[in-house]
Length: 212
Image 1 (cartoon, helix red, strand yellow):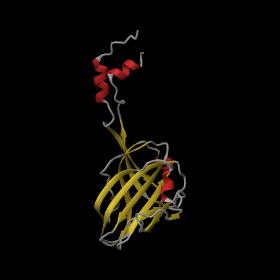
Image 2 (cartoon, rainbow, N blue to C red):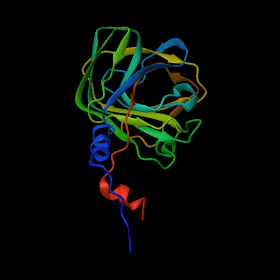
Image 3 (cartoon, rainbow, N blue to C red):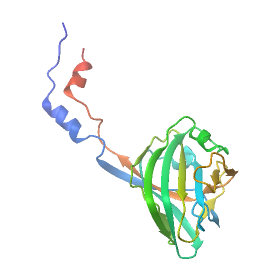
Image 4 (cartoon, helix red, strand yellow):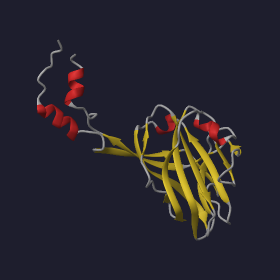
């Protein structure tokens, strides 16, 4: 015969109130060392782009929800409007990128965090790409892969700072490309990571199960 403990309702209510989603403190993480300027991934003139960049766990070292991705503006002329923009983030065990884009996921599924018909960027110290589709829950165990795809534009090049990083980046001027060109340099960016506070949600049934 199974015996159940009388679990106070207060325990259950408290767990629900402290469920994930309650905002805790956050942190801004700047990755890389700023060197030179480059047009990728925001190169205008009517081309398309598939771009990936890898950052190591040791360069982030903060678990939580990535709320914003910012590029460091270098130079450029006017404003760039990029069409059919899709930004994804992905956990990966890769420590260095290879030319075949899909291999860099290392078996993980990329999470679409931005999907816009048009994204307008202009020069300022930090260019906030924005994350509107979904926040990305970074586990701080794997490395982080960012992928950007866009097709067509009606503006100018937006030069951003890059970084000397061996993990590298890979890109092609075709948003549907399977293979790109690898460079032993990274993208100098800033991540906003919101940490979470509170207990995992539970229920009376779950608590009972622990005492069977």
